[in-house]
Length: 380
Image (cartoon, rainbow, N blue to C red):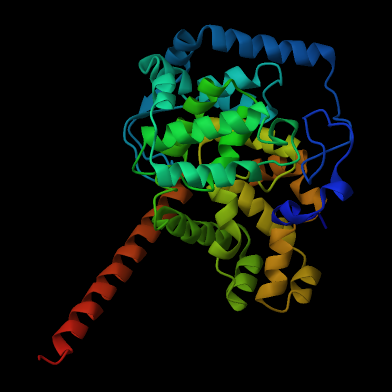
């Protein structure tokens, strides 16, 4: 089994770090890979690059022709948004094939809508950097920035440009959106984006991810992630009933294993090449992609009866889910199985509605019980 990502922070550098970085800049850690990537033919690479470059260079015109405006519900952190633009199937399919490495940074900048945010807010990033920020928040960011991708060449020490720019992006966002401020789960996302984009562009993609794709995920109380945990459980019941029954039997609540997956958008969970492909899809299709990846990992990890039989309790089951076998998180396995899931947008909508109703009922019951308790209290 692969080493659980969270355990890597405590592993000795001497035992895990190579003298040379891999092709993605990792000296060690579970996201380092020495295995050569299976190359596409030069003709395939050039053809894909040309298609993406044409789309990016003609973005406004291309999108006005290839978007369809509809009145529907889209799940961005499963919050209803009316009259939005949906990506056409062509863009979705191109993202699922994988965006060419040479154009990925610019593609993400446009797919996320960050180019519009930057255009509408000129000089805002530099202005935010000039502000002092909340002292408590600033201290929290300083304490956390060295923990992000410690095996990557950009973040090896405080003097590296990575840690400096990471601090700047997180500080700027905490001032830009004081309602959220800073949450530790945001840091790996910001660091991940900085590996691909200039700091200001990374900031605006980060704003889009936090405020749209993962809307309200980082607000204290984590109500949205609790709601999404219930939705994931409902979707698992539909896609893999035996695994769902196993988790119910051993009282394995989704929040025990999926919180890090969702809050960090898989940046601390998946091997690097898999993560890049998942983010290609995530920025085109939204939070549904994270749900699907989670369902693939859960289903594949516990699909065999033999494995479920060895998981005799909560702890054993969590160990399997938190440390999936290497083949389960490989690039092609995740993407292919994600696309094979028999889930429609309507399935997400149905589960979203169910969870809202369930939580509303729970809240009403709690308020009624609290009211009854107050009435029964003796008067002094």
